[in-house]
Image (cartoon, rainbow, N blue to C red; front, side):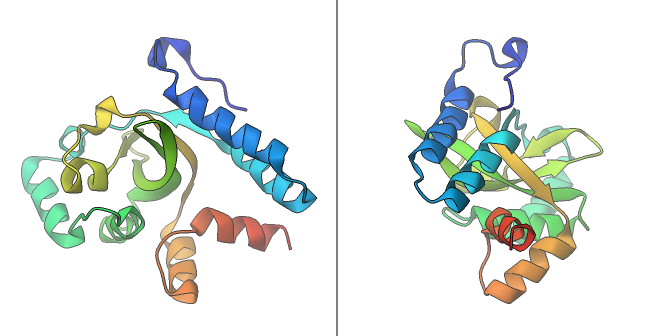
Length: 170
């Protein structure tokens, strides 16, 4: 399990709660393959800080990206995949979880590697929340070739982590 940097997330136990829930889920699995999946997920889960898109790009760029990806409620996987595609992979697709009221929910957002920062267009622009006040954990970020091969194969957005895991554990 990834340790939370106490100095960065002091007084906020939401990250640890999300990771511990994944660890506990692994313990409930009677099928060894399912338990292996959940243990692997817990091992790669790590807390991340998400910033406003305006901290990364100027207002004109943010407006253009918003028009292109059209963030909408319940469409985080589509929004994150399109943002990655439109930015030619600069905003890498990430799957993880975001805290929602009382628990972590599966979620997709983006990692801007050259800035070392995460952004969440769905939360910031569709839900109109300040993402810097939310708790997130990331499992893994993916390159465009990987996500678009899986999206085209499956016919829907999301489930990238699961598909990559299955491919690597056949």
